[in-house]
Amino acid sequence: MLVKSKLKYIQSLGHKKSRDESGVFIAEGPKLVAELLMSVPGRITEVFALKDWIEENKDLLIKVSVTEISPVELERISHLSTPNKVLALVKKDPVDGHIITKGKITLVLDTIQDPGNLGTIVRTADWFGVGQVVCSRECADIYNPKVVQSTMGSIARVKVFYKDLSQWLAQQKEVRIYAAVLQGRDITSMKKMTEGIILIGNESKGISDDILKLANVMITIPGKGGAESLNAAVATGIILERLT
Image 1: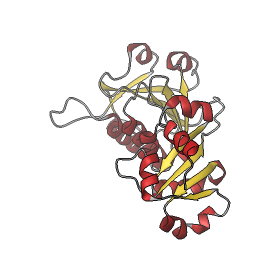
Image 2: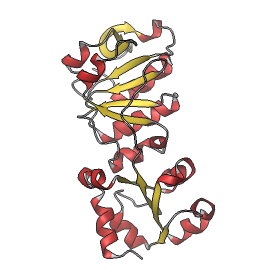
Image 3: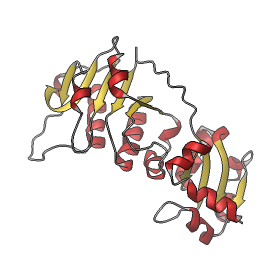
Image 4: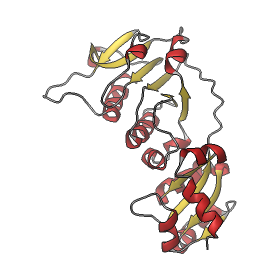
């Protein structure tokens, strides 16, 4: 059973200010919570779940604080349109801000504001073995419940940093910076990459001018139809599939 103070605390984590102050975020649903319990069990602070889910996952919960709750209580703390059996409180990843780009592929996002897009991009990066994503400060919060949900557990494996991109990119002298634009080098004519920074722009405006001027190579996905552009997450997937 949930006490009133705990209920209010969990509800408050839907807001970035509360997440920043507490260093904790929400993860929901059987698949996502199970993934985090297996990947980063030490970062799970508490689990709130229905009785049947607790019984089915006893092996994962040996060292975790678990509270059995009713469907009504789950509905009150859930940020999903359809609450799904379990909600966990998870400590944020203690990233130190130091990013090594030499010898790696780094995905850089300029003002990706849709939570679903950001989460999907992180999940896509994980699929293609890209372990670090650098976001502009204008991007959606990686710990927004909708972003976390969209990562489907990849948030536990991909390091996500927030930087002043103009300043940070200007310092990246040792690796090439590739910018995804509508007019650029055809990625289907390019060789696989083992190192470099790949820039993905805002869903509607693309990469901002001050960021774009820091790129070394403009790249594009050749199209065959009449669509004006691709969704940012879809474009990321195509680029990573071709170049990594």
